[in-house]
Length: 316
Image (cartoon, rainbow, N blue to C red; front, side, top):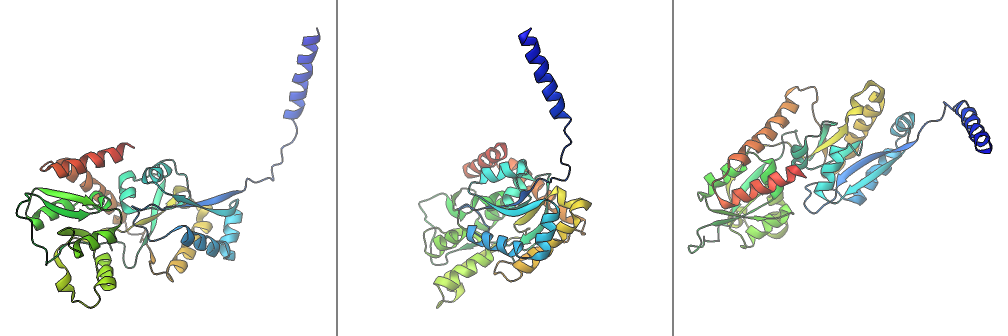
């Protein structure tokens, strides 16, 4: 009987507590998360210090602060991601409202819960141009059957026409790739005569020449072999809820703040013309070309290595 009385008392207590009116005015306050890839292999020209300055700028704008508060955000949290696979997981599970990510990672994942809204660098949304170049003072090694090319693995994955361009420009099927995480090191390795050929963005090559070979003519330092078509630059992604009417005011004010802030920075941000219907189609087309190219490129050992690494990154 004692056990039964205890059970009835606990049941009555739970029933009373369950019928206590809830405080419906309470709102869950949280932080708006902005993530960026802060890894050696990242092509983003920003670091944790830059992002903290961006955070302070946003929080000190009354229009942004009021819009954040209206949606239950009390603060902005900067998430520094130091591994590419960690960024892939963050995109897969939509772990941040806004994400700064290299183009190659976006192409590899195409996260359905995000929309590319901005892109870094100056100019239009088709702004990235790679060049194939060589050291004119370096002769090919006759004893070697292969040609060494300095390249970024991110570029090899995100530029669908790159492998064919390399073969047609260098005219040697036996190509050995030397992978660099920092594109500036690609330019330096060729200009210093360590590697015969290199591939990087034209603006990076020009910057390295201006910094270290300022007294020499460019034609004496480097020979441009080929210049590839323009590609989209690194996107800035907004999570899907910013497309909803409920988030319209916050989305507009954040985009305006981003535009005004990055207009004053060396690496500026431009707005993607979202009213242009073919923008998303172009990105999907490049993704499709990348997959087809690396599935068919089985001519050399080096290309098989690229395919293997590409497939492994897809499975992570």
